[in-house]
Image (cartoon, rainbow, N blue to C red; front, top):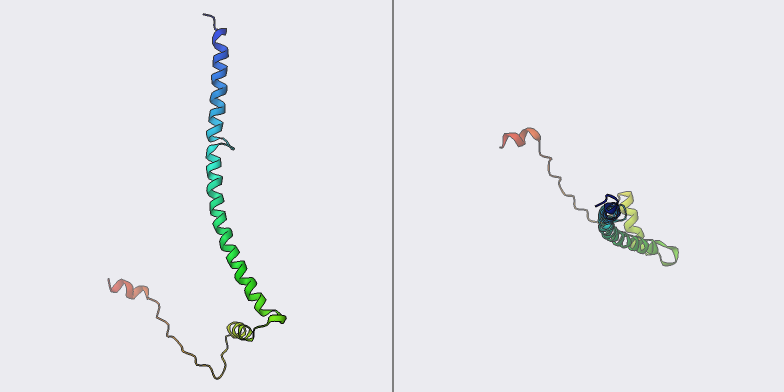
Length: 109
Protein backbone atom coordinates (compact mmCIF):
# COMPACT_ATOMS: atom_id res chain seq x y z
CA UNK A 1 0.00 0.00 0.00
CA UNK A 2 1.01 3.47 -0.67
CA UNK A 3 1.74 5.94 2.09
CA UNK A 4 -0.61 8.50 0.55
CA UNK A 5 -3.55 6.20 1.43
CA UNK A 6 -2.81 6.75 5.12
CA UNK A 7 -2.47 10.53 4.97
CA UNK A 8 -6.20 11.36 4.78
CA UNK A 9 -7.30 9.07 7.64
CA UNK A 10 -4.33 10.27 9.72
CA UNK A 11 -5.31 13.92 9.13
CA UNK A 12 -8.97 13.11 9.90
CA UNK A 13 -8.04 11.41 13.20
CA UNK A 14 -5.74 14.29 14.08
CA UNK A 15 -8.46 16.87 13.43
CA UNK A 16 -11.02 14.81 15.38
CA UNK A 17 -8.58 14.48 18.28
CA UNK A 18 -7.89 18.22 18.26
CA UNK A 19 -11.60 19.08 18.36
CA UNK A 20 -12.35 16.43 21.01
CA UNK A 21 -9.56 17.76 23.23
CA UNK A 22 -10.81 21.36 22.90
CA UNK A 23 -14.40 20.24 23.48
CA UNK A 24 -13.42 18.87 26.87
CA UNK A 25 -10.53 21.04 28.08
CA UNK A 26 -10.49 24.16 25.90
CA UNK A 27 -11.35 27.73 26.94
CA UNK A 28 -14.98 27.21 25.88
CA UNK A 29 -15.14 23.48 26.61
CA UNK A 30 -17.13 21.39 29.04
CA UNK A 31 -14.78 21.96 32.00
CA UNK A 32 -14.92 25.72 31.50
CA UNK A 33 -18.71 25.55 31.34
CA UNK A 34 -18.85 23.59 34.61
CA UNK A 35 -16.57 26.17 36.27
CA UNK A 36 -18.78 29.00 35.02
CA UNK A 37 -21.91 27.27 36.31
CA UNK A 38 -20.33 26.84 39.75
CA UNK A 39 -19.23 30.49 39.80
CA UNK A 40 -22.75 31.54 38.75
CA UNK A 41 -24.27 29.66 41.71
CA UNK A 42 -21.86 31.33 44.14
CA UNK A 43 -22.55 34.78 42.69
CA UNK A 44 -26.33 34.16 42.77
CA UNK A 45 -26.08 33.42 46.50
CA UNK A 46 -24.01 36.54 47.05
CA UNK A 47 -26.52 38.59 45.04
CA UNK A 48 -29.40 37.31 47.17
CA UNK A 49 -27.54 38.34 50.33
CA UNK A 50 -26.81 41.78 48.92
CA UNK A 51 -30.46 42.23 47.96
CA UNK A 52 -31.46 41.51 51.57
CA UNK A 53 -28.99 44.11 52.81
CA UNK A 54 -30.27 46.62 50.27
CA UNK A 55 -33.88 46.08 51.37
CA UNK A 56 -32.93 46.53 55.03
CA UNK A 57 -31.06 49.75 54.25
CA UNK A 58 -33.92 51.08 52.12
CA UNK A 59 -36.34 50.37 54.97
CA UNK A 60 -34.12 52.20 57.45
CA UNK A 61 -33.71 55.17 55.11
CA UNK A 62 -37.46 55.33 54.53
CA UNK A 63 -37.98 55.57 58.30
CA UNK A 64 -35.60 58.54 58.44
CA UNK A 65 -37.25 60.54 55.62
CA UNK A 66 -38.94 63.77 56.67
CA UNK A 67 -42.40 62.74 55.46
CA UNK A 68 -42.36 59.51 57.48
CA UNK A 69 -39.87 60.29 60.22
CA UNK A 70 -40.16 57.81 63.06
CA UNK A 71 -39.06 59.54 66.27
CA UNK A 72 -38.14 56.23 67.91
CA UNK A 73 -35.89 55.31 64.98
CA UNK A 74 -34.25 58.74 65.06
CA UNK A 75 -33.71 58.52 68.82
CA UNK A 76 -32.31 54.99 68.57
CA UNK A 77 -29.83 55.90 65.82
CA UNK A 78 -28.72 59.11 67.55
CA UNK A 79 -28.05 57.28 70.83
CA UNK A 80 -26.18 54.49 69.07
CA UNK A 81 -24.00 56.88 67.08
CA UNK A 82 -23.29 59.26 69.95
CA UNK A 83 -23.00 56.48 72.53
CA UNK A 84 -25.31 58.35 74.91
CA UNK A 85 -28.23 57.40 77.14
CA UNK A 86 -31.15 59.43 78.49
CA UNK A 87 -30.99 60.20 82.21
CA UNK A 88 -34.20 58.18 82.81
CA UNK A 89 -32.81 55.13 81.02
CA UNK A 90 -31.62 52.13 82.98
CA UNK A 91 -28.18 51.07 81.78
CA UNK A 92 -26.85 47.65 82.68
CA UNK A 93 -23.08 47.31 82.34
CA UNK A 94 -21.63 43.89 81.64
CA UNK A 95 -18.20 43.02 82.93
CA UNK A 96 -15.69 42.09 80.31
CA UNK A 97 -14.03 38.74 80.66
CA UNK A 98 -10.27 39.11 81.06
CA UNK A 99 -8.30 38.03 78.05
CA UNK A 100 -6.48 34.75 78.64
CA UNK A 101 -2.83 35.45 79.39
CA UNK A 102 -0.35 33.40 77.40
CA UNK A 103 1.79 32.66 80.45
CA UNK A 104 -1.11 31.42 82.57
CA UNK A 105 -2.50 29.35 79.73
CA UNK A 106 0.74 27.35 79.47
CA UNK A 107 0.97 26.88 83.26
CA UNK A 108 -2.47 25.30 83.54
CA UNK A 109 -1.69 22.60 81.01
